[in-house]
Image 1 (tube, rainbow, N blue to C red):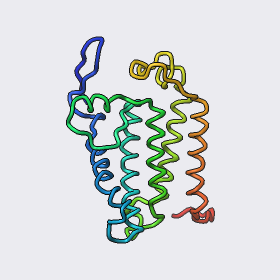
Image 2 (image 1 turned 90 degrees about the horizontal axis):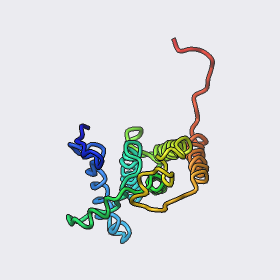
Image 3 (image 1 turned 45 degrees about the vertical axis):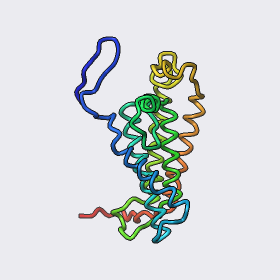
Image 4 (image 1 turned 180 degrees about the vertical axis):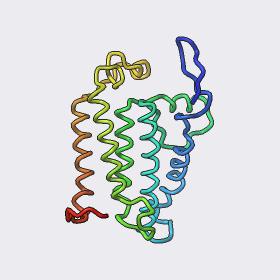
Length: 208
């Protein structure tokens, strides 16, 4: 999106662009309304599909946050519908270190994987557990690669020139250990899908 510049200070978007929280707010509103009822057992219907629908929303929130991670890196982690109060909004809008954002995304995907079914009545036209597993693998591989190859550049939390130090002074984490953990999660998630999918036999004959 286009932007206005305040020399030496801040970049102010002319429109919402990557900073749009609309879809994240929708997901948080869903959880605020549904989870208490789900935990109380007061939602009527097919229990398997109820779990699946909740899992889908965890997937969708993770998808939105991944887009923010790719576009903006450090980003606020908001998990509830916020009141229209300046001080609360200022506090909750603080950008969190990108490694924490990645961990939050993966936690949402783990919930989605736990709740979603392998198949649904809508067949291939609906999100499934395997989709969540593959997306988890993609998120983990993306962030592991980013942190490994940008370490020390000022773009990874804890770097000497990391801008986030202004908001999180003294923040550090073990980048190498985090990268190793992410790569392990990426491989495990992909393996969980690959081991349960039968590929078509390769006959060596081209389809003319």
